[in-house]
Length: 358
Image (cartoon, rainbow, N blue to C red):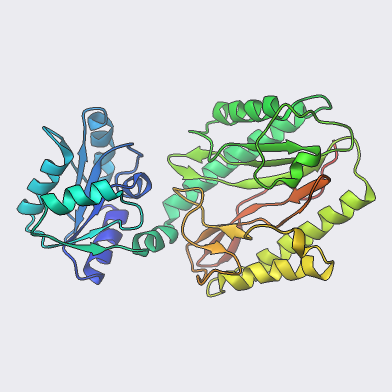
């Protein structure tokens, strides 16, 4: 049995249910090993797994089923009719469903169609399972990360005064694709000058000037799995103020990384980085969480924020990305991707964090 199907069957048994029904694209990918834009997956407590698709995905689903063992069913009329037939065949009485992501219309449709079935809220359990990565998933994340890092180093050769954020962001995406990325993890953030003070700013026609910071937040995907990294560099020269601010953010990031381990509360890891910034009265310019889970989604599961109730576990992959953002001046963020392995913490990001001045 495919390992992710086996884990899902154990989850169903733990919840004392008969099966789970999945519509969410990333959750389906977790079972069928690719990302259909539409479809349904049903897994029973015995590990029987069905992938219902339309004709657009039949061949792809069947190819992946050679590895995953899913039974592929191409719809003859509607998805709900095929689901009904499986529910009847497997004698399913209690069905876990994705209450956190299912649409209201979809819920109503299946609740009416399967009127004899008890629907049980899945809540966060499936995501918690996904957050504990298997070895093959780590290898795919590493592959995505290696593509992104290689592309970043190539892009540095193109960073020059007068180039615009938009043209460089577009070039970056192209280089990642050329190097094997199956898509970007998110819209590439590439900002220069005062625009770097916007944590999630959008690349514009703004041009690089001598003495600017340039901030890159980027990721590649490989077989559905994401990477995520941020680096901030200087062009031409960096002032003493810029260097001091950069060194402070790096110090905060290293403190967050040092605090990261299995059993540590996410909020406490955040606090480790926050305290470094607070010592210099710069924490007020730190405007987001310290990190987030990464996998089949670019933001998945837990996050390292002061409000988080989560605890890091073996198998988690998380970003660690403190930043400070001085309005109308500059911003700095440094982000690595880390894996909490059975042997301890592993930093998947290899690109230097020493301030690069081009």
